[in-house]
Image (cartoon, rainbow, N blue to C red):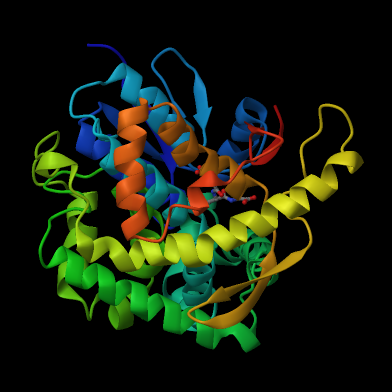
Length: 366
Ligand SMILES: N[C@@H](CCC(=O)N[C@@H](CS)C(=O)NCC(=O)O)C(=O)O
């Protein structure tokens, strides 16, 4: 038997929840390796930055970025594809992946960092044990407190500030209610098997909202159908099983999700694009954009919301746009028909120029 894939990850990590769920559903032979303090230097050397998750292939390729990891493994493990073959479901899956990866960050970070029991009862203890398993507690605390300070440093740029927490909470409740209603009818977003969209969405909904004690109890715990989906995503009942809905159907119970995608996330992307375009002349050759540019204003749950423009979000948005543009004209027309019903016709005309490529956590013009 060949060597297994290695999944360098933490249970506490947003994007590790995405790749773990994917590896399990696909039945890919793998072993999860908890990242230790000393692994961080190796990861930095191999993928260019300290980040999780990282997947190491049996051929010793070190892969980073959950979307890139999934794209590559989809080619190597074509059984039970997670990207639907039919046009509307395909675009829907890429859209929800990008939204789950990027637009849920304020909610995930607010609920993790602004309710102290998450830190005292879970993050500090578990993170410290992960980083320095054999050290005395005071040393574990010292290193994990440093990581926590780095992560808390992201809050402001994500708009997680006291004046805006009411909007974040209102938004989160409305999205979770919509998902609860959806999962009362369907096992996954697009049928009886998970799609790329489910994997994007489980990122925020597993570690931060589904496992940290406060949101696990107050948000997910109060929505049993959603809680069951979170559970299914981590422990699939039928790895490689299930099917997408017939006739390329995208359930109408997902309409509130697409309203957020096109009414909230897309304005954020347009404003981010303007910031990126303004920053192009300042770029040195071969260097990426800063991970965060200036502040932009959008609306969240109907309220004004300021946050930093993150160029990486546009790289994620290229994925649904590319998927649509690669389709035959008749398929694009079908997608346009569906998009018109969910307020997405104009949004999908977004022209991301310059086109962006990824370099670890940064992006730069192709
Ligand atoms: N887009 C990347 C994001 C990875 C990421 O941000 N991971 C977090 C932990 S869940 C991290 O390591 N952050 C460190 C940082 O942002 O500097 C992916 O999809 O894998």
